[in-house]
Image 1 (cartoon, rainbow, N blue to C red):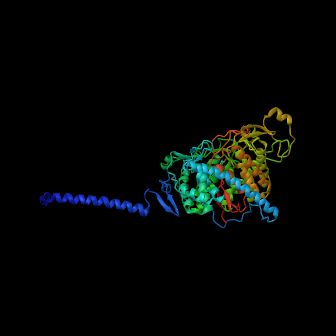
Image 2: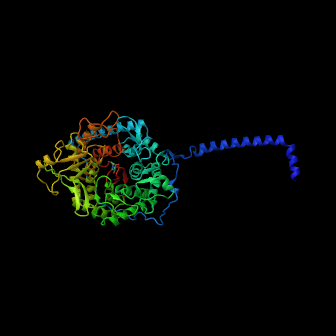
Image 3: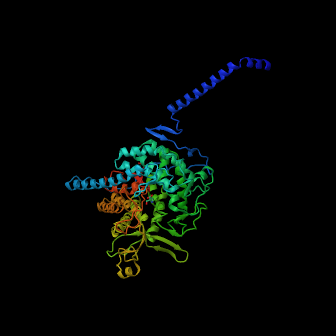
Length: 587
Ligand code: DMJ
């Protein structure tokens, strides 16, 4: 057999070589045709490009939904079931005024909307010109930049989607949405991302844009990101860390932080609840519910029972590290999300009411203060408390721009839980921030400052001598100092003004918002857009070449909504996440 075969091969060698060559060529051609067919029919080149619901969709290079968990969960707590409760109305019962006075008022509001929209378009166009790939525009130099921890996934692009929709800029919205659905979350120069910022800006931005437009491709992109962010909970304690490190997440090496800002690790309940509602997958809700249960367990065990300290040790699950308490920087949205999560769950989970009431009782007794002012203004601020082991709680009468959301939060809690005093407190805190704006030469409140205080929340006499002795007489009366006099284009003060307008129907708030908008525009406008400034105390202002995405996502959106019909993003239909992205409330 073997000998015969060899002979046969020797005799037929040239012929065999030709056949082999022909076969090889055929194989190459066939392969090329196959690749071409795949390219044309399946759209697999580049590998993950797809046509999805009318968009050219780019699927992320890494599918986190398939990632094996190091700390799997045996059973998910499901979303609460049942018919959503009919909660008290958040919005004032507005009526349309068709009288000549009403028509004239609408003309004023319409021209204000146009001015806010034009500020938005100026900023948006300049950002678009540097490229959607950047996180932010630098509004003085005209360059683009990526913000640390934001992944370089176009933070401003994603954060602006809902504003484009709300302002009726539909062509721009679809152009931006088309770019957003091509984001590949696995393509980043960074080894980790900021869990909180990515949740509130990117995930919140996509979910908000989906809830407004119902464009399914946006939801698909949100789910991809949600699956990546869900990995943050894959730690031994099931609590998330501040940074989501991609490599650690892939190799089951993540641990929660020993000293993380409490807001950063607790403010995902709105976004993750909405994801579960939209996908029917309870894993997202289960993750945030575990954090809520810890808040419940700790609420009355802290050194200021009712509130949680500014920093959390979620690695060792212990409380005893920190005795500082604030509603401002680092802790803010922990509290903001309590009434909001109650609302998005249709009132079916009572724990959020309990956490809200307990914490706000403590805030009212310990953190709120009334500043001493020459006009005895009926206003309040929320300060910081440090609990000393020897002498107990000490209040620092510090105001922060970041804490100006508190007015709106008290209002919302007051409405949802039927606590009228909270709406009044909310009004006074909101007016406090507006007072802080009106007092400064630029018409804008500083980032952080200290005030002279009354002994209680009741009015008190102005003490000129004390102010002369202890204060900085370069500052307006009432201010002790302006510890950080920058303005970073932040939204919190106009946020509360907007919420108060929608909740009370009082048009005074629209006048406040208009004053604030004009002041901000005057102080921050550059040739290209709007910029953070070095000091609200100096005119002309020194522009610091920074425009964070919340300028377009929040500050301008809240202003625009304040001058719009109350039906546009009605607060009985939507709840806004901490980046102002509207998420649909269940009916
Ligand atoms: C925003 O990203 C959010 O509002 C967050 O809750 C606080 N910081 C900025 C705005 O100042």
